[in-house]
Amino acid sequence: MKHKIVTIVFILALILTGILYYNHANLIIILTIILVIYLALTALGSYQIKLNYYITSLNKTNSDSIALTFDDGPDPATTPQILEILKLANLKATFFVIGKNAEKYPELIKAISADGHTIGNHSYSHSAGIGLFSRQKLVNDVNQCTDTIEKVTGVKPVLFRPPFGVTNPRYAYLLQTTGLKSIGWSIRSYDTTIENEKKLYNRITSQLKAGSIVLLHDTSTTTIRMLPALINYCNQNNLPVKPINELTEQ
Ligand SMILES: [Zn+2]
Image (tube, rainbow, N blue to C red; front, side, top):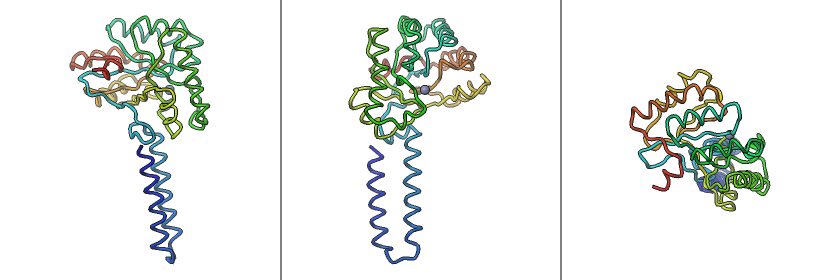
């Protein structure tokens, strides 16, 4: 893991600086600069799943296809509309569902599964404080989501997306313990904040290429308005849309 290498380099830098500059007037300033750099790298590594800093995630595939991924559902107000658009286009996607939503709306989980989409684990609570969970609390939370999905569909999810894309060393323990495979993304759409569908479309299509994994949310009404145009773009540019598990098995 990259964070282990960075930590070792950090400790060596501290020791070397201490030895070389132990009598220097600016020793504290130099040590502080090293510490700030280390903390900045740690924060960047936590928030940028693409860096594979704490865990290794699949952030793009080697296929000629793309994957559309929908997080944070199911939601009775929006998920059925996403399913309808995908069904009309005869496309299969990947849904990273929140366990507590799945528990509340099992009929939507059944509908996603019946339509042939892949269902992944996006934690049970999707708690804003999940980054501070102890490793056992994190494992319990994620396992609760797995159990909920399995109870409804009869299928145990194998894919996992860390909530907010934030990771830390506890996630390495989580993946090791549960056997789940972490899925990141190559394109973050920001569809929960962008309200203009044309802007969202441009943001995604300007980066889209073979192997892309696109992060969307089936809770976003902007995505509902934008999705048919995105699917058209994929068709016109010979970019087949497939669920992630099909792309990794190739
Ligand atoms: Zn999420």
